[in-house]
Length: 429
Image 1 (cartoon, rainbow, N blue to C red):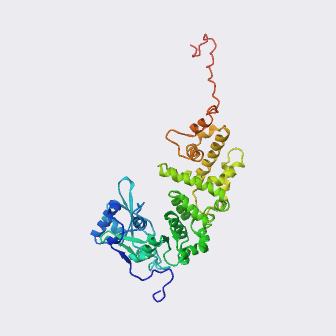
Image 2: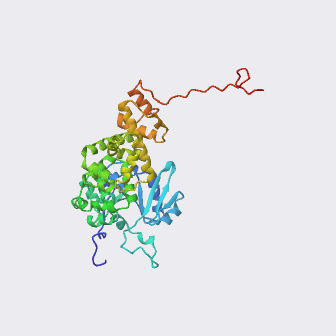
Image 3: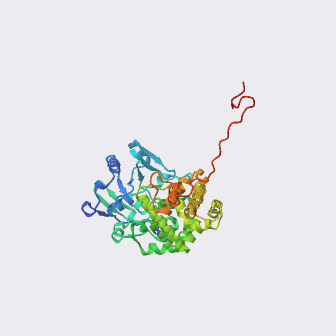
């Protein structure tokens, strides 16, 4: 390895350093608790940088969602110097520094991608210390160049080992290293490239994009739990542009199986999904957050609705059977799938009731009735329900004369007369 470097190895080069007056980042835009961590680590003699998406967003004039920190301090050293820190992870340990109101700032030790078998010690056991690396090695192991920038709060400079500054200026997403090699190592990198390009409105560098068409099917070889984790990231934040990009590269089928194939083949079906994602994004910005199960129900509804139309009565068993055999690669937990099926079954009954004026009010006993009610408002009204609103109020406005509850009231039975007590219902003396 010393004489011939592989295509996936980090290059030997000096970083590009932007001084304070050559970039737009101000400490006023950085979370004060993140600055406290950075300065404390420096006071103890460690190197510590703001890293990742936070630096990228600050360079673009955006407000970062998270402020992550990279340092040469080891996890144990971080824990000794911060009273509010929890070290998590098994293979590579991360320090989570906790602050009031649930804020968590992640502090990671600089690491590198080792060669196969290199991280085992003499006894054949995993040695995490061999994963630690230098800032340049840490930058190179990241996925894309624009996410591998560092901000040094001491010198106020931006440090770039991988060409991220140039790619920011060109508004493009480029994989770090050889795309064929990097996608083969971890196919989920394909998804991340598309996600950042879609959310930022950037183009994709030519070699990076060409390799997507070649290696896209490798997504099916990724662990289902990882695909589920990546899908949740997109369902929780700016869903529509990423889903559009996945469809454009014919990758939805490698995540959602038959459901993804249906959305790729039928643009009318897909356009209905986009309309729902638009609504979901709007209500999220207005402060109404859907649960994970509700979001998945929205994702599957355009595909499930035709199945429901072919069934009389409760369509839940048909939806459950179809999802089981859909070949979905993302491992959606059974509990989530069960909840989604129940929500979709009630939602179908609600939408039919709004069209025909008859509702099975016994469904109100179902625990998922309120969730289906929220989705019914989204689909039927194009908005989230206001406080105090429910499906009953929506149905009542559509059909003022229709009964809101079709259950028959039982007649109260009179107590039986006891013989010989003059008609009194009490006990005889």
